[in-house]
Length: 383
Image 1 (tube, rainbow, N blue to C red):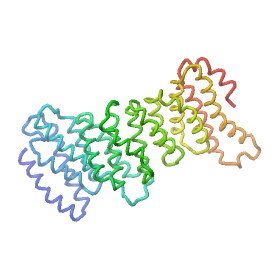
Image 2: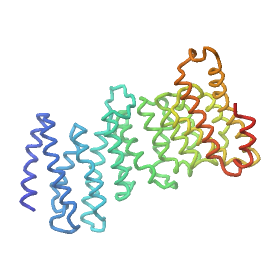
Image 3: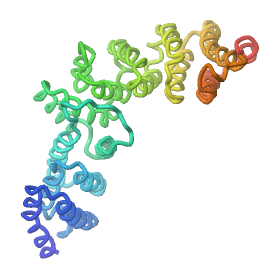
Image 4: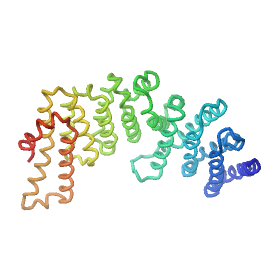
């Protein structure tokens, strides 16, 4: 095995030459060889002389590959690291030290590869190759957190953020990878998260839509933490509410609102009527069905936490809001020239969305309220 590994390691110079010549295809071929050899060594029993940790230069080479400027090549390597973390225990101090060093350097490499073009005008496209790559990296970082822990990665990203805070794309990349760690952070943490939230909630004007998109996702993943820190929940909710009417931010904003409503519902009851006003304003905005359902779920989560003597009136208020667009759609459909007042297909789709939202209200409202009010509301509130 030593002869095979040493022979493959000699390809490093050829890989570097191909990199200098920007010969991507040849780089891919070399990387494929490196990864397949590393995977075969990972399968060896821990402590075996043929285990991957017996060849630190190979691990070093894989980290070099993770710094390639072409994210397609990085994507060939990135899946190796969660598999390596999952196959190894951290009981051996030597292996643990090597693995933690590799993991720290990997986070830096992935942070660089996930940075946006600072001069580009980013618009979200879920089918975009770079977005797919970022989601792939996010999944890998999330998966490794179970083995490596959240604290070292968060501290590394915090340091990268602090030393590059004048570059919005560098800050965004740190926040993006932090969101992969956020759900693992205990709610009682007062050291790691607080500086980040303080900075984000005092930003005067976020630089780019993609930056705001990442912040909203981070807030959603930190919902459990916000549940233990109500002083920051108000500030986060203000940012989320401001983003909901923005077409390209409504998706992460509605999801973040739903997540906060699960962990912060008792704190958010005072905002119920403001959410009602917000829901009224979303009528006709063209939100997707899942976005509208997220807002409805958030509202119901908060309603379920309210005193029982006010739940029915609040539920009536919510259904009255959802009744208005339904009535409008039905009235338009009855006009002789109703088909000429808009796209019939669009009207049917809107009808479907609002009916689904009405159904979601009764699906997620607590059983006590449901059993005492559903018949009354169906008779008095539906068009």
